[in-house]
Structure formats: C-alpha cells, structure tokens
Length: 176
Image 1: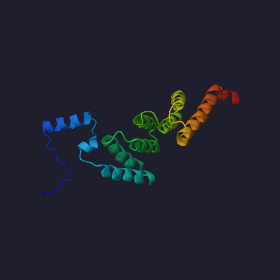
Image 2: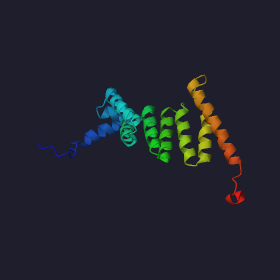
Image 3: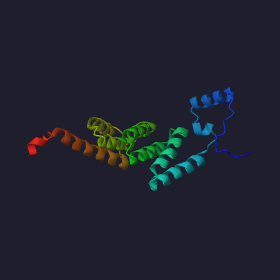
Image 4: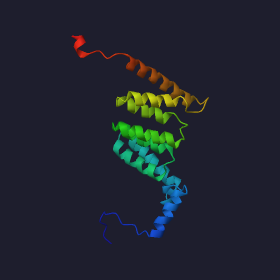
C-alpha cells in the first residue's frame, strides 16, 4: 500500500461512538477511551515542556492543547497551555485557560488565578484583574507556603492597582 500522508478514516460504528460517549460521561478520561495510558500522557507532557523551554511556544501550545483534551483534570496541562499562550501574547485566551486550570483544582490553588490576573493587567483590564486577585485571598491551604506566597503577591498587586486607579491621570496638555 502506498502512503499518501492523508489521515486514515476511523471505521467507527454507532455502537463504538455510543460506548465512547458513555464512558466519557461516566468520568473515564478521553485518553483512556483513546487507549492512551499515563506513560503516553507523561511523554507528551515532557515534549510540551521541552518545546516551551526551548521557545517553541506554538508547538508547545499544540502539545498542551492535546493534553487538555485527553485529560482535562490535570492542572499541569492547563498551566502549560496557558503559559504557551501567554508567551505568544495571546493574553485573553491565556487568562481563560489559567481560569480553567484553577477550576481543575476546584478553586483550591491560587497560582492559576495569579497568572490570569497578570494577563488581565497586561491587557489593561484593571477591574477584572483586581477581582481575580481579590478572589485569591480565599483560596489555598492555610499554612501552605506556596499558597501564602501567591496570596501575598496578589495582595501587593491589588494595592498597586488601587493606587494606579486612584491617581488622576494627568492631561497631556497640562504638561506643556
């Protein structure tokens, strides 16, 4: 048979499709339905991480997108996708993806929301960033130094935002 480089269509029956949809609705990850095990996901994660670390953000984005589809419960995959998008200046999308990362932790980890707020700030969305940073105050585990570090960073950024918003902007014509 001659290889054409074209994807081969899957011969799925209606029963196959119904089985997959039923498994996913019962909480089975799409990766497990597709026959991918944890080792496969870890290998793809390592690839995404290497691509990101070497500045190949678009390729890293592709790897992390696949991972998010295969296992939407793993926060690392969402964080990798968010970082890849942020590095490409796709800030609005990165902020949304970081929020998905936060949701995957059941709102217990403040770090994804901190990074979402940084994207919002860079976009000039000061009110949204302030609300995101405020929410971080109630997240995390008391006594967890990493969570407390993000809470402190968030509080510091909030005070900078409040200071910036409270200072009246000087009119350009006043400086002449």
